[in-house]
Image (tube, rainbow, N blue to C red; front, side):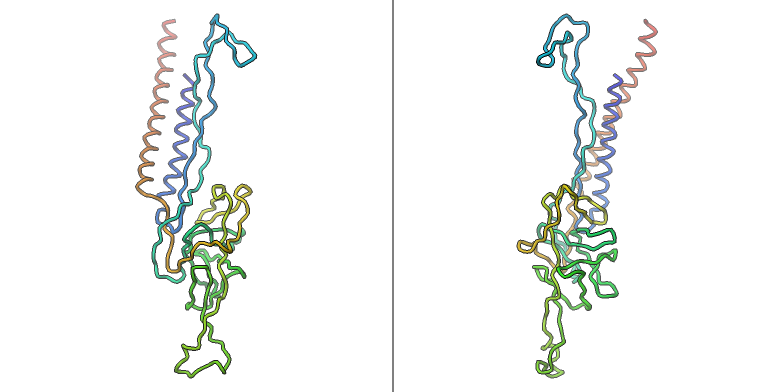
Length: 282
């Protein structure tokens, strides 16, 4: 009976963890490229229940004998095993901002942060005072040649991730007249965005602010040089959180928490009767 209290309490604790994850998913439903988390639970080891004061002889386990025949198994509760991130593609949201980039397919942008290299799918970038392409927090976006410096606003990013700028530095022989100045400006590939992927996405460490960090279980970041996702300029990848489904999960968590709470209350009432009534009758 006392074990039932612990079983009910473990259920309540597990649902508290689940509620934290669901709440975090809903809080980030509008964050670009946010990937929702899912909780996985596991049961505590089950226990064999045997009868006492029985004359029967039963093998338990094989090769040994026990005079207490098995009645069955009893569970000892549940605990949260892990929370892992689901990396399904989010919808494309058009912004027409040339600094907004979205990845159509698997892969991550590479960001240089004070804590080391981090990876993200959130392509909401800016240009800092020095002309570098940076995240909202001021961390530099990395290309094949290092931090990407665009210097001016008239640049484009093609589907292969090439950062293309218009260069007006040509030999005098190539120049036309001042009236045709726009005609002699030629495009030049400044750099190419670094896009990487991992062997085991499930084991990436979620750092917050849409950043991920590699772990020994995820494997090292591998450069995507050939089969790369398409880079869409002027778009942002929306969150893959389904707000309706998360609200349903939140209701399920509340109901499960209440069920475990009522189980504890029932066991408490039984213990009270055991102590106050049965003991008095004895």
